[in-house]
Image 1 (cartoon, rainbow, N blue to C red):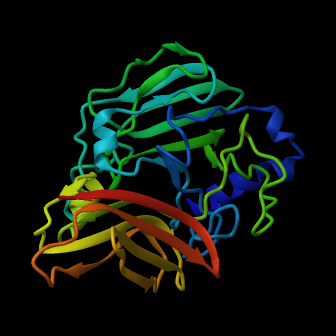
Image 2: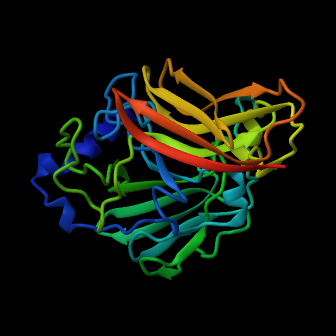
Image 3: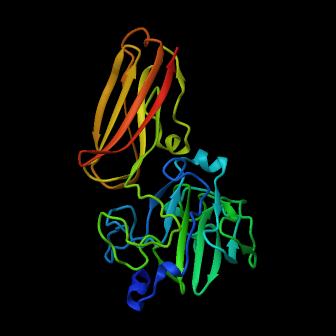
Length: 323
């Protein structure tokens, strides 16, 4: 499998084919990248047991052959985000009806042979095809044999099959072998964009960052954060604690998450959490217990910043009313 994938990633360079002229892709999700959605993981270019995206960074996992367009929370998935055809073609196959559920080790039998979950395959001729995986149950709008234009709605982002967060996995293939649309000829320059891609408008590379920031009166459960249900907009003056959390993706060892709460009478708490490893998704939280009879009433502001190698890579804020 790995040999076939690596051969596909470099086939254009070996054959002298001007890949960019073969197929042009539009963004396959109807959401604002970098705001309402983001790219969680890219195609793995590492030939060994590790993982490396097309910029030689760890936004991938071993043998990953697609590009994952993700939503910050399960609530965003429930509200509905359309998946659209990245290029014109003919639907070659589809599946619907699989449950949207976080994949667990005991689920291997449930998804055997169906790791893509609910999905659609579109044939673009000349050996090119795109596959759209992990769609929401009941959302698929097309059937085999349908002709689609670029931008035709195929379904919605879900969490079906072998998935543990809501996302679309887009897999591009040439002659049934996967191709990275960000670096189709394999001419990677570490730390810099590829010289050419297969995108009509290449999505901006985001090296990791914050997905959500919020207040609570205790350290939230991780599932509540992932579901988008942890943040509070109001708390009583007698709340047992004021807690800020930051939910992020793509951390690297040595990254810092700066968490701060400011209130009506100044800074309530400020904390720096040093992240010790690469993680696809993570959260950190800090807070202060109520020591007096009540918190000062008024507006509070949380600021969470991710820092890498001394440079700010992401910042988000949240507001809280205490009364």
